[in-house]
Image 1: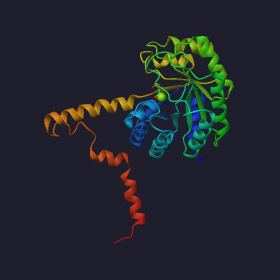
Image 2: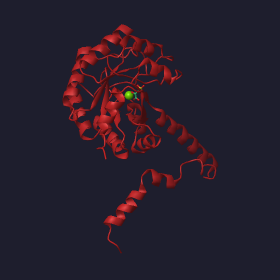
Image 3: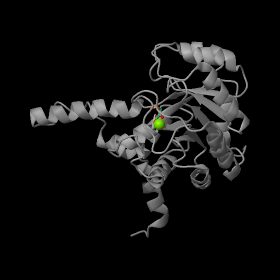
Image 4: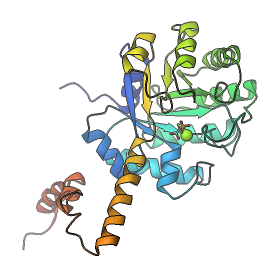
Length: 294
Ligand code: SPV
Ligand code: MG
């Protein structure tokens, strides 16, 4: 049988290959299992979602090693490649170097870093957030690429120029600089309600290098439009944490109001379902092999 393809190589193939690929958000070991079960080929380790799951804001309130631990649970829970949302890289070039080394050690297939300042603020909060100096950010990219210990590790450079109210020319200038600095792909972010910015960027960018998008705000555009525009990868960025908020709220409110579980049982996953998701059968089989027969 063919040797299994590493997670690093699989993420690389998703980003660099000709077909439109999809990364689904996860924020915990459990949600990583759900993503795999649904049939996705890769995971977006969303900073917003991982923070929210910890009860924290998307402002680097979690330390980078706490993020590393969280993403390790996700890597342990499924064999899917993970693109970690590495925010700004948690500092300067030196912080990016150590981050990339640690991600490679833990089997995290790639990282996305954005051209902003530490501590970051979520892109959908406020206007005109300050951007990093372009050359300084190129240093972060080069330092990250020089630090990977797996040849297929992917570094995605995220351009926040459009989000921060800069021109398309500035977005293109930065994308070009990050591409030249060695980024494996560019994530062009937009918070417009339509995809005109992104489609306009795609037209001018051509096929210089793969482009990743996050259509959280312009979700109305058909996916085929992005496929035809030559987008490499779409990130569904936060929809599992949002789904869980809705489900948990409804469940908590119902149980509180009813003082009973009868309205809820059957509407929530069974306890058996938890055992199956966590592969309790494997533990049973391992016990047969390793525990003394009594
Ligand atoms: C995230 O999922 O944390 C992201 C995407 O960075 S966004 O929230 O759109 O900035
Ligand atoms: Mg983020």
